Length: 87
Image (cartoon, rainbow, N blue to C red; front, side, top):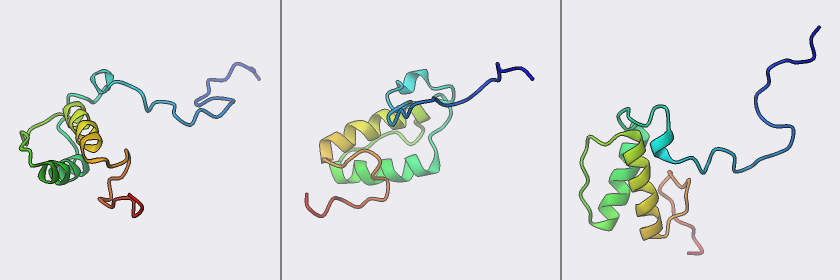
């Protein structure tokens, strides 16, 4: 057997691997935003008093989510809509 098998992942942990990719570089970035993105973006936009187009791409939605999370003080990945009770 050959020792040169194709592998995925990394021999050492990389906890933030892939998290810093620019949404513009996503293979599916031009596809319509997902239902989860739409719902979360609607929540963030309402809280910020902003109106956004409803026909955003996945990449555009992600950029708006990041921006609105920073504006509102929500932590990234808090798609459940709950804020930190200490904050």
